[in-house]
Image (cartoon, rainbow, N blue to C red):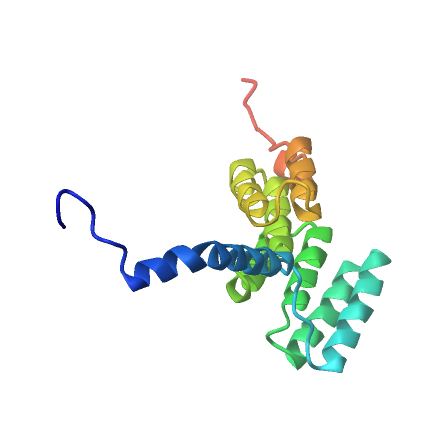
Length: 185
């Protein structure tokens, strides 16, 4: 430095300054492109697993959750890494009222794809149904961070949170009167 003047930028600094805007724009493009695929479960490479999943979804649409689960489990037997089968198993468990089991399946999907917004939404929905609304709100915040407030999984979970937990069902055995014997002497 001479006379209080800063040293001229080095060659590497010039390159950084010249290409920084282009690098920033390219990284933003990659981030947006990558976020579009969040929640899309990769297709199985095995056509048998895809056929079993389609069969299970058709059976689930008829309201036969247990039979659908059998088809989804068969799809997993064919392709154990098939994330869509885990999501479908979670959906069938929720249809049967087995929210704890559903959460397990959604978490299996999230272990394989941590940013899967469909799994996050399904897990959050099962949490709301169990009464864990605050945990579901954390899932909603994560979904909104990944795909925004207007994406379908975020809107579905937000609607479930707004409705609140399912009413608790009490079994007849839990409310049966216990006979009490008293002496009248």
